[in-house]
Image (cartoon, rainbow, N blue to C red; front, side, top):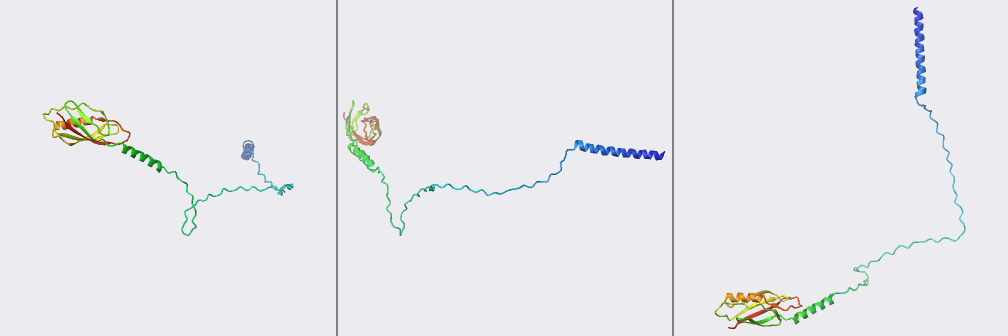
Length: 214
């Protein structure tokens, strides 16, 4: 009995191994990718041939075209010691000096023709101020000042500066009468004077001498 069971067990074990081996072969055949054996590289054959140029046809010889390079511009330099002096042509520049000199002379001529206002004499009375004109005419004379004094002084001298438009831009008393009311009143009167305009752009000076008549 023991011998029969041992043989049966041995057959069973062998059948199991055979089945496992068969299953493994089947698995490899069905599921694993087919791996092709490496192929041997075939040698490449290279053939070198010499290509000959076709023979040239007889004809006229072609001329070579040569491009001319731009000539370099020569710059003349000042001659140094020991060098041969070279004449340098300078361009004549148009000078504006003659025109400027002409304009300056014209302005100076106009200034000489237009004299300063110079000395002006004026006589002050109770009703009016009579002005004896100098070299420049008056176009406006304000009303005469009114003084509340018992006696008029001898004279008052006022220096004036007049612009080209004819307005008195500055006035100062150079000789006072001694009466403040008279001096200040004549100064205000003088600043309101207006002379004729001139074309020359300059300020003219003059002196007005006021005297009084009763």
